[in-house]
Image 1 (cartoon, one colour):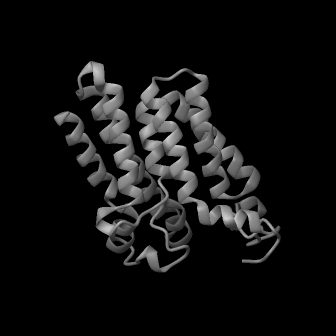
Image 2 (cartoon, rainbow, N blue to C red):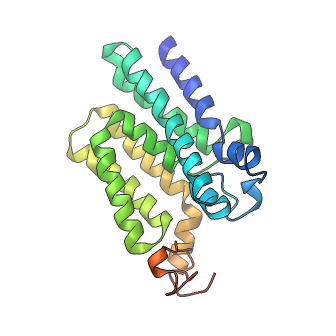
Length: 215
């Protein structure tokens, strides 16, 4: 019980570190909450500060999900390792989504969630990573790719017969990701969600939304 509490508190505090804000202000002297979508996540950092900043934030957010879960799975007693690892994973995602350092606000939990999945089930993460990029390339919408990967996680753990704590975590995690993307879902239904412009389609439909509207 004490070990579980230590990992839950530690994971939440680590997950609460807003790398988008730390890197944005510390290196680029920019508060990403005042630009782009205003979100303190990887996608907005890519949009506002560019590729290098986005990669740094992605690594930081992924690491704060991976590290506590990796340690919990190895340091907790064998009989409770799966449960403690899942509790640490949930706490890290909660910290990112409802950061104590941002007064209960935060990002959408995709990168940090990916980090927890790498620690729990690396093979499933590899599949979800491929799903994310395939959907992103086809739809050019990060939100759609994120939702597809989140849904795929629940399906994957059910199909592969993972331990019950992993299944519960996957179902709850998918629900959290969908809830965090509720504004994106509204824009998707209205045909107003922003698209990513890749180099090969920059000249065709640049800056258009799913409904054909110009951003």
